[in-house]
Image (cartoon, rainbow, N blue to C red; front, side, top):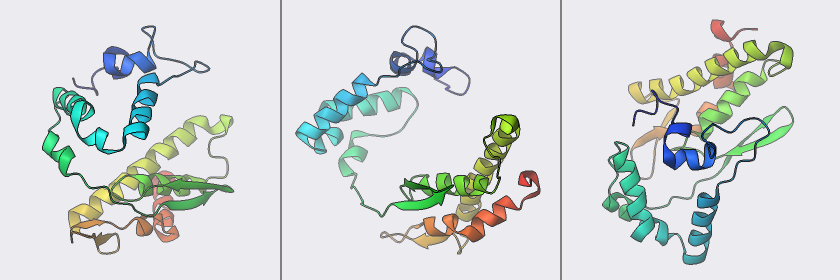
Amino acid sequence: MDSLATNFLVEDPAWAIDFAPNGTRLGLGDRLTRKRYAALLEIIAEKGADIFYTGAIANSTVTSLRNAGGIMTLEDLGRYKVEVRDAMEITYRDYKLTSSGAPSSGAVALNIMKTVEGYSQFGTEALLNLSTHRFDEAVRFGYGAVSVALAFNHSELMAPNSEQNLVIRPSAILSMHFSCKCFSRPRLRR
C-alpha cells in the first residue's frame, strides 16, 4: 500500500480500527483508544521483552511489514540487541522536553523545537498559518542537516558509534550554534 497516495488512517484496516473506528478519522474532542497496543504492552510486561522478538508477535510484525513492502526478517528481530542510551533534553519556553537520541529522530525533533522557540508569537492563533510555515521549514532544516551530515561525513555532526559506524552526534544537532544557524536562514526569519 502506498501510504502517501491514500488516507491510510481510514483505508488501512490495521490503522482504521484505532484512528477511524466508524469509517471516518477521529476529530478534535474524540476519544482515541489503542486497545490492541495496550494489550501488546501488557503481554510484554508479563512475559518479558523476548516475546516481542520471537514467536507469534514477531511473526505478525514481520508479516505486516513485509506485506507493506518492508524487508525485515525474523532473523533481523532475533539478532536485535537493545542499546541503552542517555536521554536528551532541552528547555523550551520554560518546559523541559526529553527525547531519545540517535538513531531515533529525537535530537532532530528537539532541534526543531529550539528553532521555533526563537519566534515569540509562534503558535498563537493570529499567526497560525505563519507558525505552521515556520514549523514546516524548521522540520526541513532539521532533517536536511542529518542528510547533509550523512552525505558528507560532516565531522561537526558525526561521530563513530560502538561498532565504529558513523552516526549523527545528537549533541551537535541540539547545540544552540546549530539552532541559530537554522533560525537565521532567510526562509525562517521573523
